[in-house]
Each structure stands twice: as structure tokens, then as C-alpha cells.
Amino acid sequence: MSHETPTLPAERRERHGSRYAQRLRKAGRLPAIVYGHGSDPMSISVDAKETLAHLHHGNHVFNLSVDGGDTETCLVKDLQFGYMGDDVIHVDFARVNLDEKVRVLIHLDFHGTPAAGKKGGFNVVHDLAEIEVECAVRNIPENLRVDLDGFEDIVHVSDLTLPDGVVATTPGETLVIHVQAPVGASDEEEDGEDDAGAETSEG
Image (cartoon, rainbow, N blue to C red; front, side, top):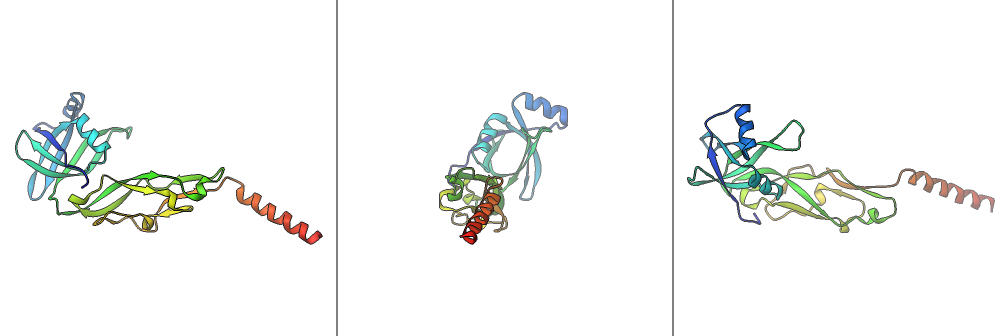
């Protein structure tokens, strides 16, 4: 990883249920669970503001310190959202070691514009916001920078440059972006060609 693994203080929670979870969230806590590596699942809560800030900056791996005890390296395996789909209400953490290979979704960070997209009226359509990759936990990137200036009009997953040790598991033929011509542009071009042809015939 290109950044230091953040440590999240966590508190064990013995009570469950939607009402208790709502009270936790109102108090600024985020319900979560930790599982994996042969240990029993453990229900916890973490500070919502701190956790969401790390997630927003592309962190996938955390050191969890439960009730002030030893830290455990954990990977975010799942995020549960509210019914509106715009707020995280629960986090699933899986215990991992840094050399363990995992599959995670990585956000694509776009820069620049493809050559065809610089033409008047042409639009760059983003077909994909993230891709799935496989790599060791220690090599998980925060995001993947995509420089579009070096492309003409189409980018597939297979065209992306990945860091060493990171392999895309999203199919290579999957579209990442494409440039869309203005509506009617092809018809106008064909009409222009037809007119040119007619003038040549008349001459």
C-alpha cells in the first residue's frame, strides 16, 4: 500500500437489533462486524466520521484496536447502505495478513481528455467508475490513475496500467470510457459525402 494503514479504535458491542443500531448511529458510532481467520465473529462499533473519512480517501485496510487491545489487520469486505443508498450504515471487516491475496474494487481516478473528446460537441462517457483487482493486501492501491490524454476514443480495462503485483480481474474487454459523437453527426457526414458525390457526377 502506498499509505500507512490507519488504526481505528473499536468498541465491542454485546447488544444487537435495529433499534440499538440506530441509537449507535445517532451517537456517531458505526455498527460493524469482524470475522475470519478461524476466530469467532465479533460485533463492534467504530467512530462513524473517522471511518467514513478513511473510506472516502480510498482506504481498504485498517488496524482495528478493540477496547484498547492488540490491533488486528482487517480488510473492508462489505458496506451496507441505508434505504436511500447514500449513507453507510454497517461495515463488514475480514481479518487478513499483509501477504494474503484478496480481490477488491479500486476506484478509477480520471485525468485529461481523449483526443476525440476534444472535438466540438463530442462527449466522453464514463462506463466504469471502478474495477476489481487481485493483489496482496500490502499492495492494495488507494485508487488507479487513468491518464486519458494518451487515448483516441476508447479505453478498455486491458488498456489500463496497473501497479506491480496488481492484476485486474474485471474482464479486459470491459469498456472504461468511450467518446460519443454528437447526435446526427454521422448523418450529416453522410449527407456531405452524398452531396460531394453528386457534384462530381454533374461535373
